[in-house]
Image 1: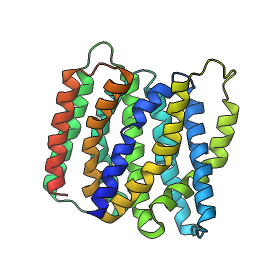
Image 2: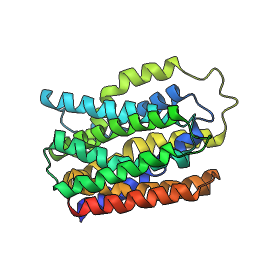
Image 3: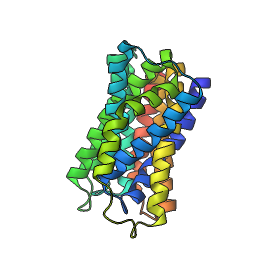
Image 4: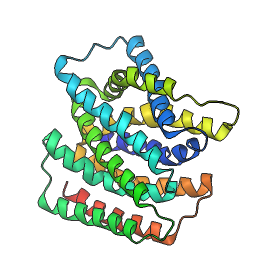
Length: 282
């Protein structure tokens, strides 16, 4: 139950990531936003590591930490920021329904877990539901945006599974903090190179979005999420992500005023049913 509780809290925090990113890209370029959020979170993580006198990771931990950095620090934020220039936050959130499957696959490949065969049937049905929804969208949909979201989901699933496996040795917040610190030189350099030409036209909503994705999406959420995956199992607790589309759709509608079509709700509901079935056999 501790694993599920931590995982649920992480999902709630992550649910605000795409709406916040959607707001932030209204004032910042995607490359600056992605690098700045990682650099800010890295500085906060470094302060935590220093204040609590955490031991340095071993050489064997460096490759897994680099994979986590590639997946959740660099890949997912950058690709979603690019995708949100082409699709709405409500549309992109439905793709989060693919995350349980991606996380479970990498949980098998990287974490050594072995769900039952029925688990994969439900997971694949859920993935096909999401793919079908993307293909049946109207002219406002963007193939480029959808492909970027799919790439982001693959990298995120890899980062989740790798980080969860490593968290069993290092601890959840230590994993994300070291991963952020590992990417800090590159992210800081990119952020400095892509600084906005002027700060005058950047409104409070964009700054608020940057603050949320830097502190909560990039650091605080992972503290609970990695701990949950490590305690409760990657494939099992990973199914809690089925709740994220619901939370995200609600936030996109309430905070951004974006239309949430009945097809989005239906697709998300179908994915939830499929992943709930997968959870039983995880």
